[in-house]
Image (cartoon, rainbow, N blue to C red):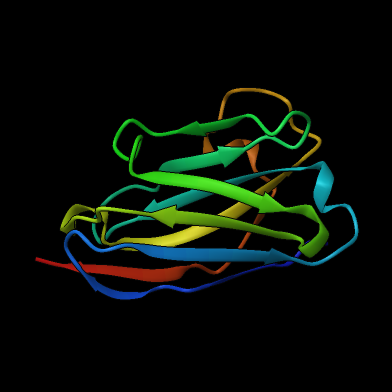
Length: 125
């Protein structure tokens, strides 16, 4: 069983930056494709970004491309999401997720086996 714990959420103003992190338990983090998802009130869960374990390939939703970056530190079992130029539309609960040994390019939620509880990100206008 893999446990994922997010941290770093908070309240920022539009145009500001925020970095959130996710730390995983276990000793095989380097074999997990890691993803970030978000869910705003009244909306469906939305893919944000992913980092593939096998080749460090990264992929972003169009809505965050150019503003968000994803990075991972396998030695620390951590994946980070750096969010720049935030807008109120980025307000949501952000969750990280893990897909062990996944090499595909379909980053729908069903591909991810383990999920964190989430961290709230609120962007005021």
